[in-house]
Amino acid sequence: AQKVTQAQTEISVVEKEDVTLDCVYETRDTTYYLFWYKQPPSGELVFLIRRNSFDEQNEISGRYSWNFQKSTSSFNFTITASQVVDSAVYFCALSEAGTGRRALTFGSGTRLQVQP
Amino acid sequence: DAGVIQSPRHEVTEMGQEVTLRCKPISGHDYLFWYRQTMMRGLELLIYFNNNVPIDDSGMPEDRFSAKMPNASFSTLKIQPSEPRDSAVYFCASSLKAGGQRSYGYTFGSGTRLTVV
Image (tube, rainbow over all chains, first blue to last red; front, side, top):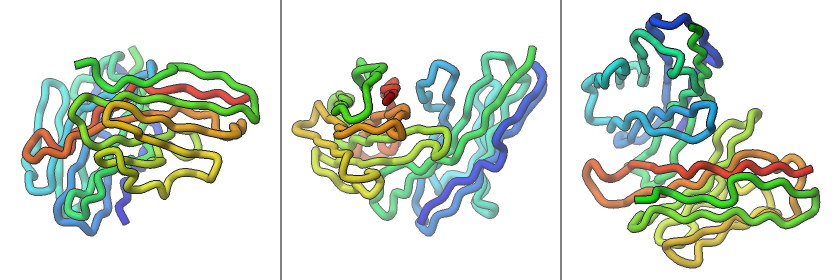
């Protein structure tokens, strides 16, 4: 069965610090998708990125970057020069494409607090 | 595109009452998901549909919960009778099956915050 682990429950940093949110996943499927979502205090789930299991290239989008390593089953998320607006709960999620089970399995989330 | 629309945004009800949550998926999406978010259990899948047919309802807590999708543009999640432990945020999401990069994207509604007193 699939599983996503976000071991960091809460992280607190000071503005402009870099921060990395860890995500470790388990799946027996060879074809799968990994996601990161942001949940700001307003409560909605905001899509950040999707990565498929065949694409291990790291991705950078502005201050955000993602490191996907199949060898360690990890999909970590780094925010460079954090800002107060980055304060939110961040969820990593997995969807197994090969099995046809389309539902997302979420990690427990990491609450990031960026202090001014 | 209006996105996934959920109603109501907030619902406060008394224990024992029936509660109905509603969801309108993105037009053309053929998968619809219901998730529940609580502090204790995080985001958990309740049920999902493909082309209006329930595929996996193993996450539905008990018989008090039921979900329907009478057509491609509407789904309901009903709790009868409601209990205080049902208090949570309920999210609906939809997804497109088409292949390529457009697949495996999930769009979430704003959620319904349910409080059962």
